[in-house]
Image (cartoon, rainbow, N blue to C red; front, side, top):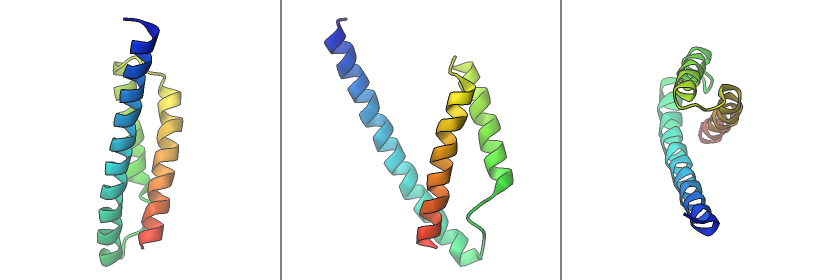
Amino acid sequence: MGLEDLRKEIDLVDNDILELLSKRRSIVRQIAEIKKMEGLSTFDARRETKIKAKLKEKASGLGLDQEFILRLFDEILKNSREEQEKEG
């Protein structure tokens, strides 16, 4: 497989990542509605701690840099809280 073919593969993966982030945002908005109806906070420290522990384990199993994955998901989780606050 040549360089251009590999770049096309990367482009497809990038598009998949964007599609999944869009799907995640849609779910986050639904969660925001439920939290608003139930009077719950947008931030759940215990939930985020569990998420991060699972991410570290999964990243390790996939041979990914755990710290990079945690930094990436810190941004994703921050964005999710911001989306929930907009909806709430």
